[in-house]
Structures are given as C-alpha cells and as structure tokens.
Length: 548
Image (tube, rainbow, N blue to C red):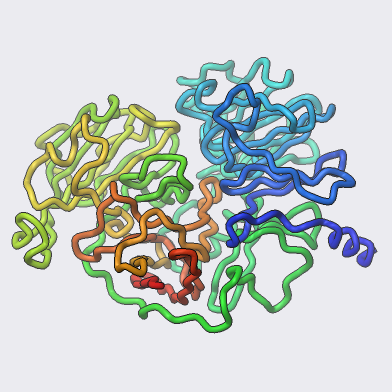
C-alpha cells in the first residue's frame, strides 16, 4: 500500500514557480472527483484534474465579465454534493463554481460590505446541501448555493447582521470551523463551541487565551492555536518553526515553498537556492528606544495582521501601508500604548472615528538630521476605524487605559484597529492627523515601538543596490511566522517612497513578534540573489543588511 501511495505521489507534478522562491501553499484539498485543489498566497488557485499532467492556474481578475475568483490569496475549499466548489480568501470574501472552476460567483466587499471578508483557514464546511463559511465576523450558511444566507454570530454581530440570525456564538471571531460526525466545532478567541443541530444552539467551553505567559507556555499556546486552525508545526534545528498544511494523506503537505512529498526526517525545509554557507548578520542587540505597550490586550487578539504590515502593498495590490492592523471583533477595547494627552478625538480620513495621543515621552535624535533635529522628537500614536470613542481632547491617559472600541468606520474592509506611531520634530497635531493627507509626513513603523509578544524578537535592516540606493518594495523571503494563520505571513516588503524610516534606526524594513531561532533570509537585488543568516532572541533586535 505504501509503495502504491508513493508511486501515485511521484506522478503529481510540482507547482509552477514563476518567482524562483517557491509557491506559498496555504491549503490543499482533494475533491470528490479526485481533483487536487491548491490555495496559495498571492498566486490564486492551482488545480490538478484527474489524468492531467500539469496544473491549471486560476487567477483573480478585475474584469467582471471574466467570472474569475475575487482574490489571489486563497486558504479554504469546500465541495458540495453536486460538484460545487467553494473557496475562501484572506481578506476578500469567498466564491462558488458549479462548473468545475470555469466560472465563479463571488461574495466580496461589494456584496458583503465592510465585514465577513476574512475566511478562517480551511473554514468552509459542507453538510448535505448546506455550506457553512467561518469568518472573523461569524459564520454564514446557505442551503441554496448563496441565493439566501443566514448568520451565526455573537451578541454584537447580531445587531449589525443584514441576514437572518440562525444561531449565536460567544464570540464572532472564528479561528477554525471543523465538521464533526454529528455536528460542528468552532474554535474562537476565548474558547471552543460545539453544535449538533446545524448551528442553532451551541455548547461553549471556555479556555484561557493569553499571550502573557512564559516563553515555553507561549510556545505551547502557539502549538494549540495552530492545531485548532488545521495547521501542523514542523520543527528544525535552533527552534525554527515551519508552518505545514496537511493535505489529503500523511505523506503529502503544503509549505511556504511549495508541496512536500514524503516525511522529512531529521532535516529542515530550506529556502530555495540558499547556498550551504551564508554570511551571518549582526548578533541580536538591545533595543535602541523604549517600547510602548500593545494597543490590544493579550487576552483579546493582539497579533498584527501579517498580510498588510507597515510599508506593505500586499504584493502590489494596495497602497503602501502607513500603520499596522489588529483584526478584532467590533467592540473590542482599544488601549493607549503610552502615557499622554488626547489631541484628537473624532472623524478623520473618510469619516474614520479616530483618537490621537501626544505622548509624554520624547525621542532624542542625532543632530543634523532635518529641521529641529537637535531637539527631541515629539511622539504620537493614532488609532483609526473605531466604532466608539471613549476619551475627549484634553483628557490625560496612561498606558493601558481604554480609549475606544474597535470598529470599521471610514475606509475599512473589516473590523480592525489601524495603529500609527509618529515621530515628529514639530509639536503640531495637524501634521499627525489630517483627513486630507493620505501619507503623513512623520509616521514610522509601529513594530519598532510596541513591545513584542512574550518570547519573541525583532528583525530590522536595510537593502541597498549597487549604486548605494535603498531598494524599494522588494521582497525578503525565508522568515517563518505561523500565526495569525487567518492573515498568514509570506515575505517581508521593504518600504516604498511613501513610508518613513525610524529616526534612530534608519531601516528599510522591520518586523516584530518573530519566534526565536536561526533563519536564512534571501532577496533579489538587480537580478542577483543575496542571502543572510540571522539569529533571533526574545526581547532583542537583530540587524541585517543586504548588499549586492
């Protein structure tokens, strides 16, 4: 039997890799007709149909007449009784094909509004003629292929749901949705819920969910979360963590670099093309300026959205991001990251309910770096898209005070907090919050300011071309971050011209909450691949430079 399985696996071709850095596989499923469906990060869907010798690629398209999928970031599949194929995305809803994937009907922002965009990893379940789609805003279900929908959500979600309420959960943020023999199982932010009547009633089992543990406890928490989300964790030397998506058997799996066949024993999955010997980066060092607190409590959803970090364009799909996102249910408390005074409380860009704090702490900088550089910079934090503001201009706040509630006001596509940190040589609120200014002049990467998760570290650095100029919006591969898997990490992007380096670090990229261990990172500069080996330690920053 094993020999037969291996013979079958050897007939499965590798995924076509246009980048040379591998295809980031987020999910894989075998359909009832034996076709293999692969969801990827940014490269759409690959299908290997029975008897075929090559993969068919299905891409998103802005041409609605093409009836294509809505988004190229796919991490969920479901299959109906009569050949229906469902897919779910990271950030743009889901879709259905009833003709084997030739054409698609999509439910995305235009149909769903600013909620229901983030489908849970492997979060589509079909039971008979009913399809359940788990998202960060609850569950939608249909028994007529989307002609009508019902919702399963929490008390807050029930007040905003446009479709009839089918059932009620303790918390709407779905980390995983799984079928049971006679029911459904949901893992959420605060525990697990079970239903044996199709989602009408739920039995809730509370769990302690907090990242405020020791590193060993936090790591076991990481393992439990990954297991609940349908992701296995593989391990390499130096405690490196590899997210592995199990496929249709125990011998085949998806990885950040494609599909792996067979069981890797006593070996790591290496970055494609990396040489045996790689130049080492600098050793981890102490942080150069003090951390602020995190704006979301460790008992809520404190993880930074990895798909749209500071400076990111999500693979060229969006404008360069000016802050970081914390995806949380509507109504989640937003906390001040440091002591200071409220200098803005009200609408900002496109009506987003916004709070800004001028902090008591100031940042000493080296002289001669811009106007007023001989004086310490003023520090501000800004919190966007809230559903409710709880503090007014002039109020004094301390780190940890609740200042607002998470929402989706303004230019938002889901419930989340958008956080910015500004280091300005001028004491001027207008330079920090201005509804007419899309690219603020003094914002910096919040990941260099807020404290990392317990037991994790930070990587920052620079990428230079042969002329000694920064390389904008290039990708750095090789880093592995298994959570949050609902917004998976794939690569680092260097800043573009609309982003600003930290006045102290002068970095071209920075990323926090990195699990400790050794990593080989790689990027492309002028058509040449450059690799560096880095070591990450808890509570420290590792500096790395890439040069041709």
